[in-house]
Length: 355
View 1 (cartoon, helix red, strand yellow):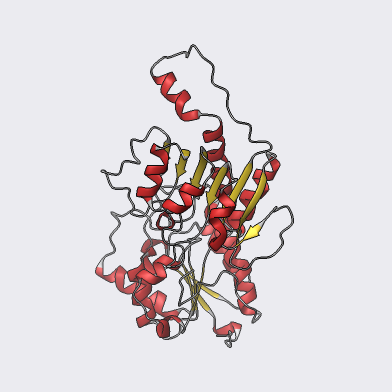
View 2 (view 1 turned 90 degrees about the horizontal axis):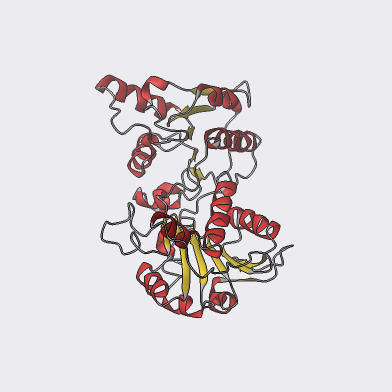
């Protein structure tokens, strides 16, 4: 659906916590755009880029009415209402003017799917993600995971805690000259590849549409993943959670990996069969796993991944940075300019496949 609205009719509502200086960035995009922003109606942030805000925050009945009245006046929303799938579903039903919502997450497809809205309802407005904003912190975390695995940081931490100075010095593995496979050569994957190449790694990866990419040795689809990982010293997953990627990393793929490979997941937890990963860790097929995402979050207390000596559990925080709100606001401003000019918005959520 193309934007057919004149700019003097465009109203944007800020639906999630955002600092006033970033709201001013949005207002500065075009003088004819009205930006509705009432911080009294938004939960305070507990930390930078806390898009959901303090869970103890409660609006009064009068404030709740004002919040939804504000959202229902807008053609564009900055953030899902209450940063939740339920909020998305409610505004889609209550706001007939809605044309576009910009999500805070890079992988907002899961939340769109969880809203329960059918394809017909979702085609009435566009949802864009903040994909790309999180590429650098996720890429840095991926490099951190690979380096941890290659440099045996888990073993060193255990020895330090036990005050053990091993009699035999165990060599670590060189990152330079090693091979990295990245599943998902999108913005996150390519930023990960850039850092990996700077460390001297050879990089291959997967992409839905196979094409030659400068600096990438080999590009395949996920159908050829088993062959691709067979020569990998490390594997980084950046893929979103979709029906097509669910448990892509299964027993077959882990068994195909080069023994002792390092595995990092910054995509979605549902892409990994966690039971198969645990088996691969137990038999040494995977020497170390750095995991920021899990099939069920928070990670259940009975998961064996919590206590595995060769696993680092990160509570889905690797994308966060102190600069996130500014970066998302800047991305939104760029998209807003495109929207006002009648262009095609980037990073649209597919209303059928949810990625």
